[in-house]
Length: 298
Ligand SMILES: [Zn+2]
Image (tube, rainbow, N blue to C red):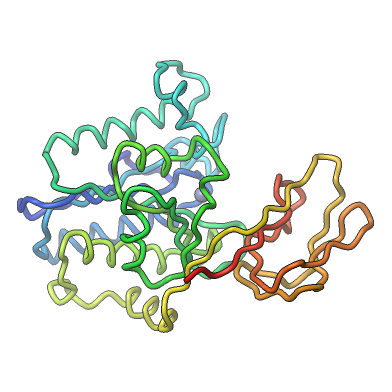
């Protein structure tokens, strides 16, 4: 999909927070972009009053236009100190990164009392929507305002991701995984989380929209029970030479029992040592992680 760097921005000229929403950091994940486009259309049509500003920014513009995950490097691994201090033009993603930063810097000139980020993603397999949050700043308290499950500590495993960068420079926020890349549910879930963030951060009243957003109703109805928070207990790393085959039927947040057969690796059984939940089971031929084990925290 061809998309402008700034997908949209909206304010009612009232002082308040900045809500910085990024979508399509991975070029094969268009659903956050579609959600933002629909949300800005509705905001400009119904002109509700909000505090502060929302700006929606496109991630890997060139990769989105080619429907590829990235051009040279994963744009969610390039936000490292050394990359941030160079003006190199290879890999291509460094240019995308600098373009995103310049949009943020432009908006930061307006002295917002508080700055939030929301980074929109999707997953290769079907999944219930969830928040992935780094427990720094007041990210965790902020993420508690939303109804979907929350996983803490996943982004601590990776480096160079945009949520680390944004948290490091003082923004409050999280990554939202909305479901399978091309599913209609992912667009609905992205719309819901962005509407809810507008309500929580900028004081949007849904009654001021042309109609109450159905996406919000759908999400809230699906997550009626108390929000569950999960921590990563174990990461099953793979070596390139490993022959790994996940047992069929697992999804994100599937419950598992101690002793349950999870996978076959190099001809041997891998059984669970936990009564817990499985996270990101690998069903593709390539990957560094076979699965994660997560459990609820109170
Ligand atoms: Zn992604």
